[in-house]
Image 1 (cartoon, rainbow, N blue to C red):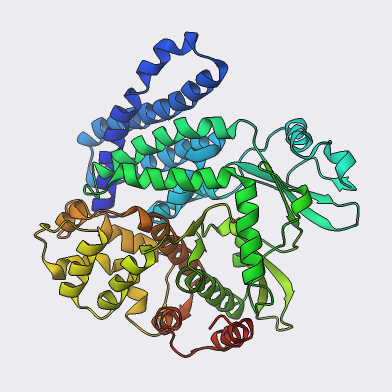
Image 2 (cartoon, one colour; image 1 turned 90 degrees about the vertical axis):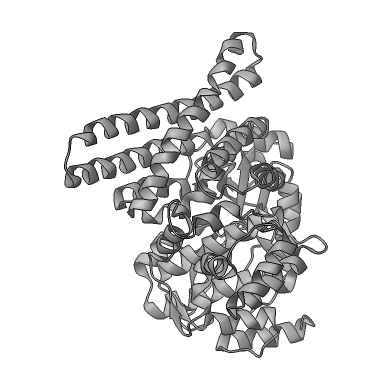
Length: 494
């Protein structure tokens, strides 16, 4: 852990104590609140208590470290980070809803923490505590008109997966088809508004230390809009059906079909797909299999962004399954894409405002880059920054596109973020002047999420050449590129 990153975390610990204290006032009126209001107050209080605990622990570490040598201070700092990660994971992992989703969306930022802390925070990317079988059955009955045992030939009471706003059960339809049934947690919609207040406080605390030019209200408003989409399973069903139709017959992308008759606003039923998850794939896969999957993920993400104008904004490791069947080549596992709740569709002019940034960035044309960043809303017109320093800052997550071939390392995100969040570093003035337009919020999540996955896969390829197939309509550069181009021509997508 670098000194600058540790300094950032220390400052955040101080700020969260102040932010948490703001929720204490709400407890005064708790006795007069309705049950729904009391639930909101309870969730806010948990965030406040978490903040207070972390600040108290930080203060104790500071006192103990004042009379210790450098080695002991480093040991205390590491213990603080590990305890903080365990505490955050416990609280956010149990809260479900927007707070857990926010934790999931930011969890890739913590690749630079000690291994024990990473292990704790990994729970934010894994399963949440499931709801009781009777609650899940009641949601199904309320939404579909009958209890699960009457609707389905078979139904698993215990979920196979539980996430931030819902859990997945395996079932068999009366016609024999196996399906995955996602059931939304009851009451999760009423917690959304108060949760987003907590998320806004968390992001404001962050922006007080780093990225001081960031418009937190715009960022959280975009997150709120996407979270509203996620709560509406009918919206997700429409998105998934559109993706499935779009990628029908695709050579290496598989998307499960939606079963409309068993899908409502709070229940989503799709065809069942066998496969192993991300962690098991990393443990059991061969080097060729990992390189194949890396290119599949990269091409799906870039194709969706630049060709389709609509993309899955949550490249979460839990959103993929890897099958042993597929093309007949054991080095080419079947990749299934899941969870289309957090989908971003470009509005008129949004993509057009962002694409002029990529070419001068990769060509190292800082003056042109900065002018385009001003036009796109990343910088104010009177920023007064050195364009070379801006380029040096902005290029960090895109360095794999400057060198061909380039192999991602597992610590790629850690290293890149270490430079971006160096609060006292040479690029701090750039960091504190930059803003993030709302249109870029979800795309930024995709950039970092994809980079983290490629790092864990140790992916190696000519990434810029592949990117230009989607941004510049360049000729296919790989076997998969040629397969996709042939498919697109048959689908009249080229």
